[in-house]
Amino acid sequence: MINLKNKKTVVTGGSGFLGSHLVERLLASGCAREDIVCPRSADYDLTTEADVSRLYREHQPEVVIHLAAVVGGIGANRNHPGSFCYKNLVMGAMLMEHARRHGVRKFVAVGTVCAYPKFTPVPFREEDLWKGYPEETNAPYGLAKKMMLVLSQSYRAEYGFNSIYLLPVNLYGPGDNFDLASSHVIPALVRKCYEAKKDRRHTVQVWGTGTPTREFLYVEDAAEAIVLATERYDGPDPVNIGAGFEISIKDLANLIASLVGFEGKFIWDNSKPDGQPRRCLDTSRAEKYFGFKARTDLETGLKKTIDWYVQSRNKQ
Image 1 (cartoon, rainbow, N blue to C red):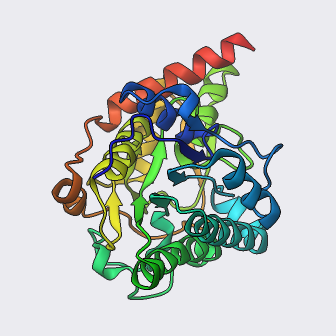
Image 2 (image 1 turned 180 degrees about the horizontal axis):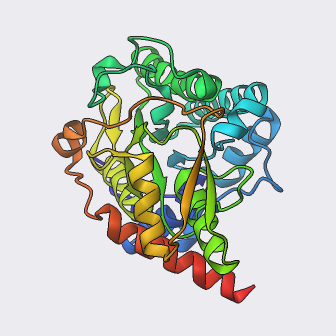
């Protein structure tokens, strides 16, 4: 257990999608803004050891929550497997090693559902994490993030270093990345449906067959889970962070179209990859270990996401 109030906390990726919501959650928990450090890439290149070491020297954090990642959808993963693997691997390793050297009290490594084997039985249980190779299109990214679990457990065994490892499912919500070149499925579908409606087009093209299933967690719920885990969980076991349901991409597309008001048809491009066949997490460990249970249902979360996107477009 650790009380985060008055603790100097570094949040890597704190200016990003999940990070900005996490910072707001820390502030709501009573943390002072001056105690929360969100290193920007312009000031610290976290793939460079000199900058990682300087970050710890200059800020002397007691807690580190590592969210920063080089990440994208299926297309981005296919185009940049080498850089995604290298940069995520190096960031995680150096941040944890220098946290150990500087006596950080708690390190929270945030991994990814992409670390699971391609054909993991549903719902995904943490015990199945090593029972196969990840889905090929995102394996380099998933394995790089998965190595933080190995480091976390190894450092605990050798040095008594308090590091935990969390496995969040696909996130969505206000502030998400809506760039079609690198976005994930929900923001991509929201943008495509919105623009098709606005331009009075009758079709929207979507990658794959629409048959795979996914689980989605609203970003504010994810932020709450990470703060609860940081405060209450000190164990070696990885922990899933999710909402505990699955929906097919085709049903998701239809739901988003309905909420946006797009009345046309989807054209499914079967020549493009589907990615992992199914994703749905067993979330019982998170509830047991630190009392987290997702509170935002999918339709409510999608409405909030769409409202944010429309408002941000109208401001442009």
